[in-house]
Image (cartoon, rainbow, N blue to C red):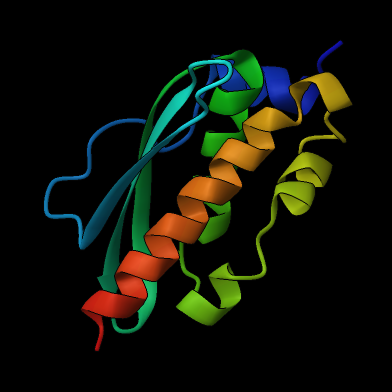
Length: 122
C-alpha cells in the first residue's frame, strides 16, 4: 500500500524534533483522524535555514512532514509557496486517495508557517 519513499520517511524521518530558537512554530491538526503536526522554521538571510517537525499521526502524515522539511530547507518564502499537498504526494510516489490527508496536513502546516513568517518579517 505504501511506496518505498513513504516507508523510508516514516521509518527514518528527517528533521524530526524540536527547533530551539525557531523564528516561527505552528501546529495544525486534522480533526477527523486526529493527526497533529507541529512545524518550526528558522530564517536566516531571507531563507529557511532549518525546518523541524513533531507529528503524532499516521504513516503518511509523518512521511509527508519529513519530506516537507527536506523541501523547505534553503528556500525563500516565495520558493516555499510552490510546495503543495500534490507535490509532496508526488515526491513520495503518489499517495493513494485514502492516505492523501497526510499531504494535506503538511500543506496546511506550511500555509500557517508561511503566514506567520510573512508577518514576522514586516
